Length: 226
Image 1 (cartoon, rainbow, N blue to C red):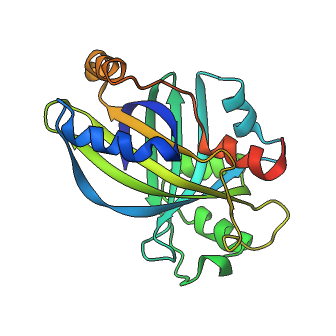
Image 2 (image 1 turned 135 degrees about the vertical axis):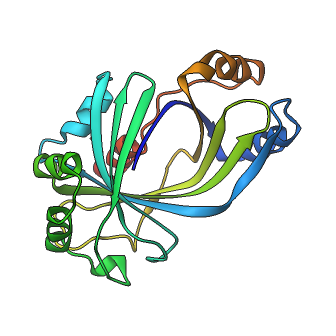
Image 3 (image 1 turned 90 degrees about the horizontal axis):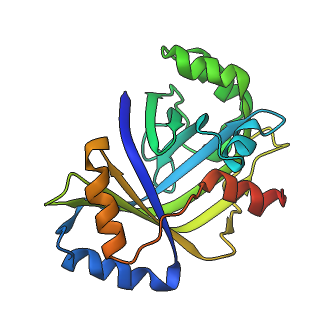
């Protein structure tokens, strides 16, 4: 699956989130919830030099990152391998289900991942895994999903950000995550390129800031003190 879109982010503190959520339902953009809240989990992969981390920190316009994603506290859904590419504010995502039949994510080993990636059909994902095959960080958060009735705009709200280091472990670790020390929530606007002007106007009128924010980088910073 390939998905292309523009993405803009706004970072707020957890304490202000209820007020922001309330404003969504009274906004002229007429947001409504389109999907039940769920827990999003990711394992990010990098190389030994943390190239993806530093590419993001340096603000490189053209960059890619590799992750495995699933939903729910356990493996209630399939593991999906994803390559997310970004050029400026425009992003694209390529994904494919991993053929891993394991009921407990904490039983997944590095060799399990290697075997599953090698069996993928998508060559872009396989090629990036060859370059960035080191599991570095586990991230988890609660996500709410909204859609505007007026604008061609989707919006997600992520809260309760948690992270756990993976470096040096032969198995995936998710049982002892740490909370984001700053207590932040992330509002992300997702839309086609032609809606950029309308979305910028909406953000400005509602007093929201546009911020660069990478859960991967924040997880590395929180876990390793980079």
